[in-house]
Structure formats: C-alpha cells, structure tokens
Amino acid sequence: MYSRGPVQYQNPVTATLIAVRDSVARPNRPLPLDPADRLDGVNALVTGATGGLGVPLVERLASRGARVICSGRSSAASTVAAIEARGGEAEDRPVDLADLRSIDALVDSIDRELSLVVLCAGIVPAKSRPTAQGFEIAIGVNYLAHAYLVDRLRRAGMLRRGRLVVVASEAHRSTDSFDLPGLAVADDYSIGAAVKRYGYTKALLVTWAQEAARRFAPELAVHTICPGPVESKITREAPGWAQAMMGPVMKAFFSPGELAAEPVVYLAASRALEGRTGAYFHRWIDKQPSDLACDEAVAARLYDATYELLQKRSEA
Image (tube, rainbow, N blue to C red; front, top):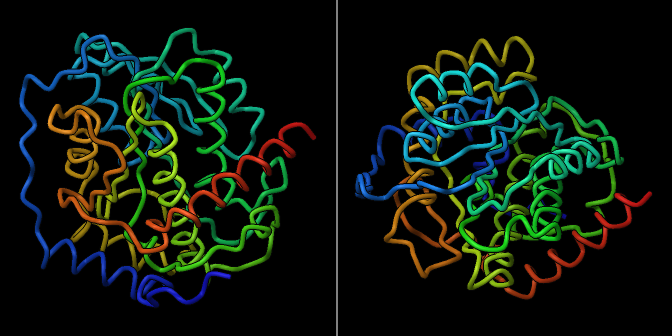
C-alpha cells in the first residue's frame, strides 16, 4: 500500500506546480566546490548518462579528472567523443536497466575497481508493462535495477570503497508505507497514476540508500540527492497533450541539466563530505529525507526483501 503520503506529489498537475514553486520561490545558494576537489585517478560509473541530467554530469565528472563509464539505454558515443576531445577519459557502455541480464553484461565488461558510482537513470512510463524478469517497469528500472547493479558490483569486488551517489526526488515524500510483496507484481496502471508510481519508486530508492549507507560504512559512503526539477525527456512517454503542456513549463521554469548537475557533482567530489555517509540533499540543501526513509526497521526489511526477490528472479 502506498497511498497515504502528501497528495501534492501524486498527480502531474500538482507535482508540476510544486516543481515550479521550488524553482522560483525557493532558490538555493550553491555550496563551495573548490578547484582542488578533484577526481583524478577515480574510476566512475554513471547510469542515465545519455539523459538531460546525465550528459552534463559525466562531462563535469570527467573535467575534474574522473575516468567515466557512461551507461544509458542508448549510446553515449557523442558524449564520450566530446569528453575525449577536451582531454578527458570516458567509455560508452550501454545498458538496458529493464533486463537484469544486461546489467550482468555491463558488470562483466568492467575491468577495474570503481570508487564512484552515480545512479542517475529514471523513467516515468505512460502505463505499466513488465521488464524482462517480470517486474513492473517503473519499479524495475528506477529501483530494483539500481539495487541489483550495486550488489553485482560489490560481489565482483568492483565497488568496495569510495562514494555512491543516488539521484532521487522530493516526490519520495508522497509515500509513507511499502507493499513488499508487491515488489514482485507487475500490476496495472495508466498515465493518471504514473507520477504517483514515480514517487513510490523514489521512496523505495531513498529508503534503500539509507540502509545501504549503514551497511556499506565506513568504506563506501552513500549519499542521496534530489537535483530539483530538471529540463529533460523524462516525460517522453506522456500523451501528446501532456507533452505540449509540460514542454513550455520545463523550458521556462525547470533547471537545465548543466545547472542541475552541479549539486550532484558536489556530492561526488567535495572533500567536505569525507567521513560522512547517509546524507540527503534537495539541490544544495542538506536535509532529512522522509520519516519512512529514516525508519531503520522499515529500511532493513525493504533491503532484505529486495535482494531475496532479485536473487530469485535473476536465477530463474
């Protein structure tokens, strides 16, 4: 069950109005990221690297010295070429997060230990459909795929220390309980419930990240961030009328990816966060996530149920 959280995040109109309000009425003051906050020698992996936030994010990580593996549903070849033209290092490794086998192939292709992973990919599907392993697509891609990727990397010895940055959303506050058996069910819904489902998947992700921060400490720090409303193609599956409405609003009020990427880079590179784990940022504001995400007992149950389910489906 997941219907009792703040209703303002549960339909497209009110969620959009909140995004506009946050952009206009609640400006953030950037935190200092020193030129010395470098990522030289850091091997990084970014999912969603071909999206509106992902492209400038990998470019900025590379400009600070990281060698970035760019993973997205489509090829990141043009972004990789642009990074290399500026003297940076990057690789194009496409992945389909709707198929655990594709994640396995991605992990098997990595030949070095990573010390930075940014989980940036996300979708808002127009309606329910199953992933290759039978998960509902939004839960499968936004949550389960990233939990599976991190587990596979850690089991392979490729993510033992460093930082894990999880890109989430303030929409996670629309949820105040989880249906753990429902993680395995590809239930039906239409475009009217898509935003509500998106918020639910982000609540799963934020809560999992809080538990991961506890379990991975002290070697691997885990931080979560809502970058605010980003001008992107995340609503590409919406009906034409909705895209016609959202397009001008995004262009006028949502942050371009170049701006929204900056606080994500801060979590990835800032020395001010050394020795800390479990932070949650809304853009530049360091704050607490929802009460649900902070409930350690709930988070532990979610974490264990998630990997029990993933083990069963990946072996099927």
